[in-house]
Length: 222
Image (cartoon, rainbow, N blue to C red; front, side, top):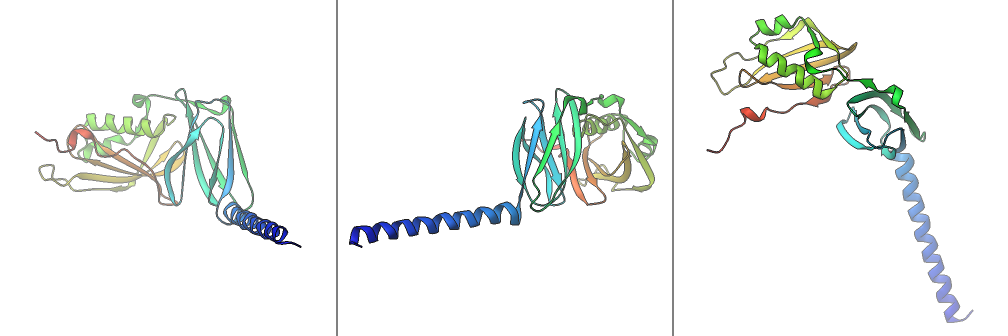
């Protein structure tokens, strides 16, 4: 074997080693950490988000696509043309998942004013104004347009700071059935018109939604 042939063999051996290393890395990524989740959608405009134990609600994509997620339980939410669909997706090791969404699966949305809040008078008695109650409905509607009502468990209501003249916000928290799903609510306000709403899953302590501090209450430059 001459020097040219030896050089060629050496190059081929290095190339083969690199391919083997790359293949090993891909196997580790595919089966050791994440799994493929494929979503088949009826519409390219369908917007999909997901949340999990270690992941707040995140945008995944639109239409049909594939993503890689760590093994665990995720709440998938898909919306298009004012309609919404939710599904709990369980990702397991070495088991790719396929999620198919058809138009018939989507729920028709309601409107903020149509959301029924059972025992809302308790919130009013705690200092919330009717205007803030309407804003609470709007924030819930923004979180999930298919929600028809929430049933407050009055035994879980916790009072917050009540001095509106100080810089400290006023806050209350409570548990409620939200269309038969248990949810934790924290409602914070800095004025008498708007509220900040935080919604979580009490079973996993996963935050599902945070409306953020209302813009009207943020400091402005004069």
